[in-house]
Length: 80
Ligand code: FES
Image (cartoon, rainbow, N blue to C red):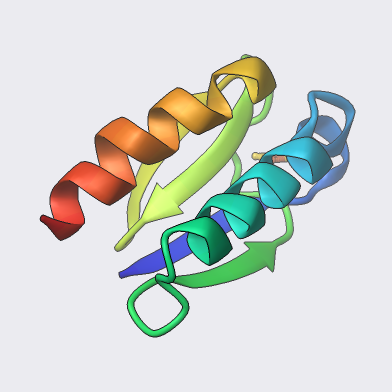
């Protein structure tokens, strides 16, 4: 699964660094290094309401404080 986090300036201000750190930690905790590929990208063109995260090319907008729940519901759950 390919997970891309926007680190453009607006998403950065909204906490993308913290989202990246949360996702990295959870990938390690769940030993998903071989199954989840995390990467960053510049502006995805949907700035404003949260941090843009794309999962296999579908874009989601999340709040930094919601990163762990999002990971559990949208990433972990889909890996089965
Ligand atoms: S800075 Fe993230 S979508 Fe524009």
